[in-house]
Image 1 (cartoon, each protein chain N blue to C red):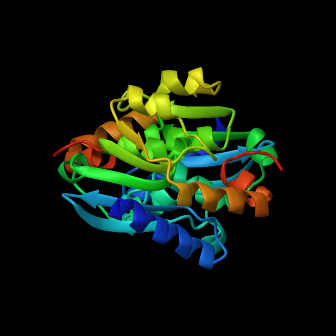
Image 2: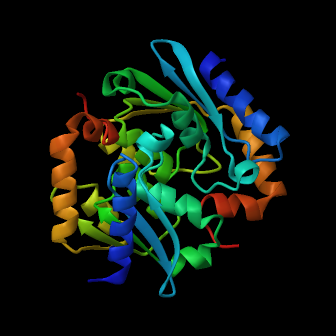
Length: 147
Length: 147
């Protein structure tokens, strides 16, 4: 398996072990993981710390040159907010574990020039399917849907 | 002046008094301000706490019904990230102090059904023009541009 997706899955599992939403993310620059993150809605009562946002925040203040060489990994298709963060910082490539259980604004993100790759990973799919079945109200809250 | 824009400007001035980037935001539900925020890049070394994100985070975990009755105010046209956060939570209306010094993805946001109103407020314009002239490197960093 892609070692960076594996690291993102490890983050998702870390979230699950904290009774959080199992979505993980890593930021890669020049072939090295510079930051890791996972969804913190439950852990921090946060509405902005989706996995990708947590990861970008942990990466700290970076130059445009850094972002221009980066790849953002996420176990799940990034939502409007996380896609927007990637667009703001002009991250040229996003690699996604799966987009069967949720799809962000993929065609819009591609229309803005981002190389968005979907790996359709069975572990990512199984993890989200199981979580959504067990905690539908939490999942709906995380993606802005009514309960 | 619109009292909610005035509250957002107060937040922007608070940011300036902390040597931060002078952009402020408030979230209004049923005619009441439920949260206030301002850009915290400098204050917290944060790449995700733009004014609108800080405000949404301070508003805490809300139901979709709450967001559906909300209005997000910002002194400046929301960037890709902040626009994306508003889209995620299906905030139906965004009121913006000005969009002369910066424009986010306004036509895309409108195409997603958001009522985006631009007030073209002279105080908001003057505040950003002055800040950008004084701290161009910080401003470029905040909107993902090279220095």
